[in-house]
Image (cartoon, rainbow, N blue to C red; front, side, top):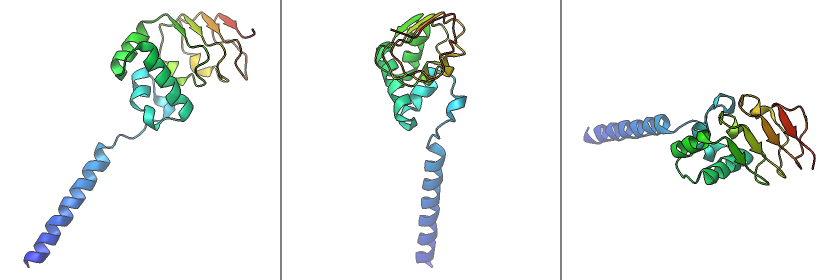
Length: 144
């Protein structure tokens, strides 16, 4: 009888531990629902390689290693220069104070993540393999 009781207690403990791990494990958000740099940053290890690289470049640019501080620093910026560094623009989509963005000599092919940056007035994209050269801002520079 004691043996059955010990087995039952052990099973309950195993079940509780497994449920706790499932609940505590953060699930990656759908990328379309991510709105802030901090959200991108917190999920960087589960992001595609190119997106993760952009997040890491932005963390370095902000000279911050925690997501909240980096977001605050990046949100205060009006100009950002990321020459020869990134290919995925999605993590920049929440940086709404940007007025100037220089992305020369990178591997950018899709500008759609920048469409919501209403303050962005100057975008330099020389030497990028952009598919659709429809400019999402007032001034775009595509050629060398």
